[in-house]
Amino acid sequence: MREQIEDLVKLQQIETETVRIKSALNDVSKMLDDLDSGVKIFEQTIETQERIINELKKQYRDHESDIQLNLEKEQKIQAKLRSVKNNKEYQALLKEIEDVRGKNSEIEDEMIDFLDRMDITEKIITTKKDEYINIFEDAKSEKESIKQNAEARKKRLAELDMEGAEVSRLIDPELLKRYLIIKEQSPGGLAVVLVKDAVCHGCNVNIPPQLYNELFRCDSLRFCPNCQRIIYIKP
Ligand SMILES: [Zn+2]
Image (cartoon, rainbow, N blue to C red; front, top):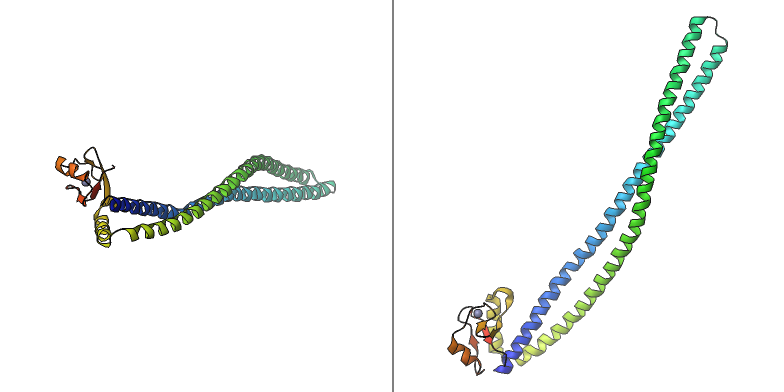
């Protein structure tokens, strides 16, 4: 009986490890996706800043051509000014020139503002791009290690599968059936549990002294009166 119990415990360990590995493998694709989307989000923040700077550059160029247009306008007025006949007309043209110059000065102020904002955005982009190299490399190596880990786990799963089949063959079919039924009913899937110092490690409840003493005989299958699991003691 002792050997049978030992084999059951072994089988249980194999099954527990299998469940643990499978659940870890289940998380792999999500972990890889999370790393990818972290990198993607960072790329998008850089793209956003690049869009901002391109928009600023476009507005800057538009302002430049507005200034050019106003300068041409002013030249035309200056030309008119030279052939003007009366003072009223002369004053009106001077006023026009003043207006055009005023507009250009406003535009120039805005351009300075654009330059400042371009400078700030440029700095943000440079910093973000430096950070990006690290983020990309970190994600890459982390993904690599996750994949390697997963490969090792898959290999281990195959081993466990074989070990499980091997151990199962050694266990009496009736006992195995019973084990599976108890496992089905037990929270956490543990069907065989250790008793130490008269305490069942499945439910942490004391087992009766009589039963505890019987356990040392290892002559038949015994169950915890509280949680109904198969119990055993370490010799
Ligand atoms: Zn118990």
